[in-house]
Image (cartoon, rainbow, N blue to C red; front, top):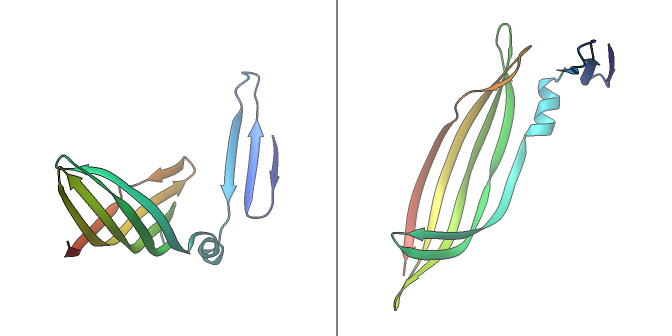
Length: 139
């Protein structure tokens, strides 16, 4: 068996006579280390190109928010909880024939995903997500 490590992540591998390579990774992360790697502010611009009820809609949007990750206490395995809280603001215009509609929408976002980590690997559980949209202006 051969391997390497830096105190946080170690990898070992072996190749038996069958010729199949087995690789095993082990990590030792503290809550503070995970927080430094996973907790961050989000600020991302994105294009909006869609078709809604047969009408081409174009515009721009911006996502702002916070991504956090924390370890949860558990017995026999690790659980990493990833959370996103933020909002998007989009400004769009849709045109059909000679009519044009412009709008601004604000969507509040909240989502959580749990990852179970055990000797067999990383197992993602279903995410929970909530999005509430308000359209304060329509021209």
